[in-house]
Image (cartoon, rainbow, N blue to C red; front, side):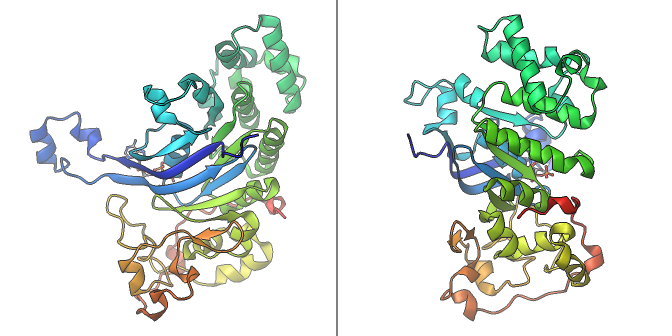
Amino acid sequence: MSTRPLVEVDDLEVHFEDSSLVGSMAPSWLADRLGVADDPPVRAVDGVDLELGENDVLALVGESGCGKTTLGKTIVGLQKPSDGSVRYRGDDIWKVREGTADTDRTFEEIRRSLQIIHQDPGAALNPYRSVLDNLAVPLKRWHPHLNYEERRNRILAMLERTGITPPEDYSNRYVHQLSGGEQQRVALIRALLVEPDVILADEAVSALDVSLRIGAMDLFLEMQDLFDTSFVFISHDLANARYLAGKSGGKIAVMYMGEIVEIGTAEEIIHDPQHPYTKVLQWATPKLDAELAEEAMRESPPIRKIDIPDATNPPSGCRFHTRCPEAREACREETPALYDSGGSHRTKCFRELEDHEYWNSEEITDTDADPDEYTMDAEDVDEGSTAD
Ligand SMILES: Nc1ncnc2c1ncn2[C@@H]1O[C@H](COP(=O)(O)OP(=O)(O)OP(=O)(O)O)[C@@H](O)[C@H]1O
């Protein structure tokens, strides 16, 4: 059996020409007049290295706009990298797509193997067709040899497995007649029916009521285990990431301004966070640890400034230095790498290096943040979300 990772992300960059939305459509004189002709690109993903194994779980977490969706879409081949590569079983996805890879693998095979579930499950389903008709679509495309009866049997079996019972009854209902939770299950079945190796679930549980969220996450993990599928979960909520990575033995990757700043197991990230930004996320997720919640909320946020810098012009050195309470002059001047923090834990911070000049350089200080100004969207999950 190959020990090669299922997906390898190597020095990945996705930069969006911000001006392209206007500039590409407008004549150059108009782009010049609008002042968008030479706008720097948005660095949505900027130098990310990652590996995803077979039957693996990765939870990508970070605040809005940090690049989670762009990275996720690039991992499953829906977004073209500006630089770097994403390889599926050793083959560069975009080279395969463009016909320049030295392989027998087709892009169709890669597309089938890498699936996505959106935040709004209804978006991927036709509300005015029955559940059966909706679920027949991927089967017809990827398993054209199946006849009607075989397709129906597979769909009914999947409905039953995911708790949508009685399946005969549900299969005839229109999608718009289903609850949000039921639609999410149908979207999951739709992705699983093509037997993918990886499913990207982009904020797939965020839209659900808190009471349904744990059940939905449990179902994802059960299906992940049952079908030996790897999952990349995107969440702005560290509590969800903790639950998903903790229960599956997977990893959490914390993103900030297009970069992964810390990666490790749920235990490492939650109980031993090293990066100052991860500590901010933890502070902003009060229900993460009920015992510490009250105490933490009384404290000031572990951050100097609330505003996220401009993604077209990220700060020099460590991108978090403008907000980091631990920042020193060295952080402004030099860019940290992901350093070994023990085990599978890696942290992009000079504080991991005992002998780095960081320790002798001057502290960066400015105004303290007011806790009431802190606006990060910290959605709660209930007590049951505590993963051990
Ligand atoms: N097609 C695009 N064209 C230009 N800029 C884009 C495009 N897609 C994303 N961006 C920008 O790239 C950055 C990262 O966006 P992305 O959606 O990946 O972040 P995110 O962490 O998933 O955010 P959210 O949690 O709000 O979905 C943002 O500044 C966003 O405005």
